[in-house]
Each structure stands twice: as C-alpha cells, then as structure tokens.
Image (cartoon, rainbow, N blue to C red):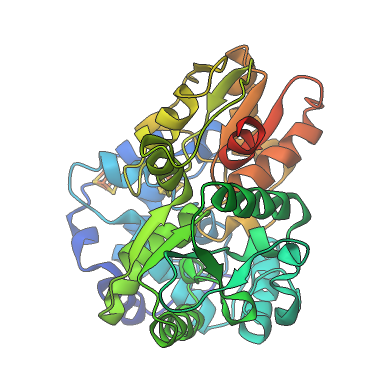
Length: 383
Ligand code: SF4
Ligand code: SF4
C-alpha cells in the first residue's frame, strides 16, 4: 500500500516543526555522505526532503523512521535545512494517522507505557526508586543542593541501575546534599517527541515542570544526555529555566574543587565515545575527557570518528525502541573502531549507547576483547 500524505498537511507540519528552511534544499546530497546509515545500507535524507517538499512522502514506509537524530547532517548542510525537524514532522503525520511499519511498532508499546507509567520500559511507576532501596538516598526537598534526576533506563534497566547506584554512592562520598523524586519523576520525554508523539512529550514535560516547581528544584544533575538536552533546550519552550548539569560535568567540577578525590589508579587503555546528545547537540566534549585524564594509570586513546564526528550508536530519535537488523547496527561498527585502537574499555556516558554497545558486544563476541563502561562506573572504581 502506498500512502501519500496530503500535500498541505505535510508542508504545514514541517513549517510548524522547524520553519521553512527545508525549501532551501538544493539537493546537493552532502547530508547523505555523512549519514551513518549509508555505512550499513542505502538511505537518503536528501530524497526525504525532496519528497516532503512536494507533499509526496510515503508515510507508511520505513524511511521516515530511520533518522537517529544524530546531528551530523545539520552540521554539514550548506543551506541550513533543519533535517531533523523535517524528519520529526513527517513522523507526526504518520503518528496522527496511526500508520506504523512493523519495525516501529515497539515504539507504540513504549508510548503506551509512558502514558500509563511515566516510563517507556513497561515498569510500574511505584517501582521507580527501587534501585535505591538499600542506599541512604533521600527524597528531594527544597533547600537541598541538587536534584539527581535519575531517568528511566537508570531507574529500571538492570544494566543501567548499577550506574544509578554508583552515582548515588559517588555523590554521597563527595558530601553532596542531593535527593531524588522517586515515583514523582517522569520520563523527560525527549525520545518520544522525536517519534512524533508531541502530545505525550508535552504532557510528560508539564508534569515534570510542575513537580520541579512544587518541590523548589533549582539545580538538576542528570546521567542521560537525552534528559540533559530536553531540560536545557526544550523545556524552556514552557517558559522555565532550571540549571541543568550533566554528570560528567558535575564530576569534573567535584574533582576540580577537591570535593571528590581519585585515590586509586585504573591501569587500562580506554577509549571514549561521544554520545550524540552530549557532543554534537550540546558541545560537551572536554569534561568527560578531563575527568578520564585525571585518573592515574588510565591511558585515553581516540577512535577514528570522535568528538564532532562521533559515530552514532543508533539509539537516538526513538530508535532505541525500534528493531534494527543485526547487519545494520551502527553500534557494531563503533565497537570495531574501539577495538582497533587497542583499548580494553569503551567508555561513554549515555544509557542508549551503553545498551546498544552491550548488545553489540554479545553479537560480535567481544566479551573478552572489550569492556563497556559508563564514566560513572570508572570513577566509582577509583574513589
Ligand atoms: S545537505 Fe542540505 S541542501 Fe544538501 S541535500 Fe541535504 S538538506 Fe539539501
Ligand atoms: S541526523 Fe544523522 S541519522 Fe538523521 S539523517 Fe542526518 S546524518 Fe542521518
């Protein structure tokens, strides 16, 4: 079946989502040369833009769901076309028509879980703080130094819960007066927005903002670059501004001010992966490296594609919930790049990257070749 979205609706949606910059596209194709999809299969953002311009988008196809919102092509476009916003607007049209190809249907499950439980992982809201039940972690109250906004994967996913525990123990050791919101915390809404479910995003964001205001929150520490991006760049759309700090920045500050002492060494060769939403989208490249460089014994080496050219793990734009065939996973390529440096550890600072990398580690049978770590776990080992 070929579904052609009405010209007017597609064009109006695009205008609403990101203005009219898509009209300036002159079909140079530079976006396709940097897009990570073209390392694993054919995909053309240039073609999507062309079709959208004429309202000829096939909204029932897979292509409108491919973009991981990695941020590489907008950096390179000579005409300032906002490719990510155009892509999201097409997903909004498809979501409005409830048209989803098979590989995307799991994103609908995530959406239903976000609506009922405030997380995309189908866990009960009341279990959101269970990861902390054996720790002396307090509920946030006004006057505390910082709110630790844990995020969904760190609250529920078995692999990522270890990172939440390590984070709380590090903050405790540094003497930080922090608290969490427990079951009052909702998903930040970043990824569901990128799948076109604007209404769900707005409702999650409004609830979080109300909770922050009601509880007197001023400064928020986050472990996920996706929470960071949304609080910093998207929540201001609701006329609010909270101080948001990513955990890698906060560790850097705690170490520099002497509150956190790195007393042990970590004698391993390590390579750092820049998550798209920390690096390209928010220019945070140096702090994680500064932290790693302060650890005695640790040797930091760079991969082929690093910093602004970092290779996306494949999990952004809601793709973390969608099915990607094994032969098309960017995370496999990233692990190969990491292994080629001779590093024993691939370290990063994003729950989606860790989830995809752990899966690729199994797929590639790299269990003996490479460890996958969140930066928090390395700090935890050396304090
Ligand atoms: S890089 Fe920009 S101008 Fe060139 S094809 Fe892509 S969207 Fe169009
Ligand atoms: S944002 Fe990234 S994944 Fe999306 S089209 Fe551009 S380069 Fe490809």
